[in-house]
Length: 287
Length: 283
Image (cartoon, rainbow over all chains, first blue to last red; front, side, top):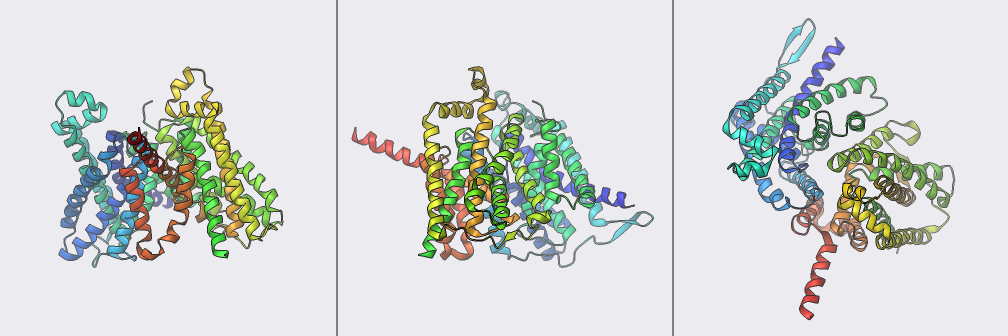
């Protein structure tokens, strides 16, 4: 029974990781930038979710508003911060991104206060029994469902729509895509919008699971998501999904069984280093 | 006077620490997001020795050896993974280090090691030691930069594959850069342990690794003078901008961001550009 519980915890955590890391992978695949500030958009999503839910009482509306506002701010981040740095060495953008992330955490602390916000009436707190004696909270079930739906939508979008195809073409070879008449600029905007909106979804869901958003909510996400996309083989969407789930499950089992030797983060990074030494290009990366 | 001594000691330890990263990242082009781990190894080694009443002057070389040994190990990793993969691997090293230290009884666990005795040098003597070690490493860096070794490093930083083709033993020089850089970080760690007379897992984490990388990049990556200046200023900047109080970190990060956005080649780049402009005008 313990195994099953740990497995489900791992899957819930893995789904959250997947939603956050996907945006990061999209950005990396397109621009080769390690977008640390992505984690700040995740936190922002949590704040917008809680504030809108408390103001209107509708969780669904909050989710939609969070996706749109955070998506737009993501595009703005690209426009103001990354676009001018594209022809510079990659670590310049990385440090700029880290600075942006720290600044954003400070802004959250100053604007929303250091102690965080909670839902006035947290929705979906009940649970249901899967098999005798093992309960899953509605909120946890929702996390898994939303992740699956979002990922299926993303898969459908990139495979069957005109925009999605031009998106994949740009990731594979920007120059060739441009030669075929793809508007690269629009693809980049779209990329940041979709990636940031997914991070916002994750933020709203994490705020629901913990019933709390605080300024530092994104700090774990900031480096853990980097580990995940590297583990998956930078820029590979399928690799990112597998790495997210693997890390979620390994962390949930590992903290119980070898938690006295290594803490959660060390566990994740230990796994990362072992994988990279065996496969330097990541799980599904190509050389 | 005591305040000035503390300030100067902090500055010179930071200068040494930043120069040690500059040796790896600036000279040899190998990015590291986990440099604080090596400082941590040095600091913990020295702290344990000094708790056992070993002299600081003995503890420093031992700290360098331990940090350099871990550096050699990570250096081998750098032969296997490159660029962004290496950045994240080194980031993993710092999280592993902190995670392991937290759980070890004999390293003080969460609480760390406190109550380290003062060395026999006295405050001023210790300050002079810090300054001379920083100056020594700065001199060594300048020397390397101007020697054939500097050219080899430049070539590896520029393009590893081409360097290999023209007959440079890339692996050997990368390992050398890692060992020297991390051993120097270990020395900085030993000085840190003596200066604050306390070491804990939170003093050598990811944030500290980023701060030191920020010093290198703000100074102008690879520029010895630029990095020294930036490290000296940035290490005490939080104290200097006390007046903005609650907005201290915000101001710091905003400065760092603007620097990357508007002058990504750092202070050294700004100075070079204005020098060229002055020269251009006079001729």
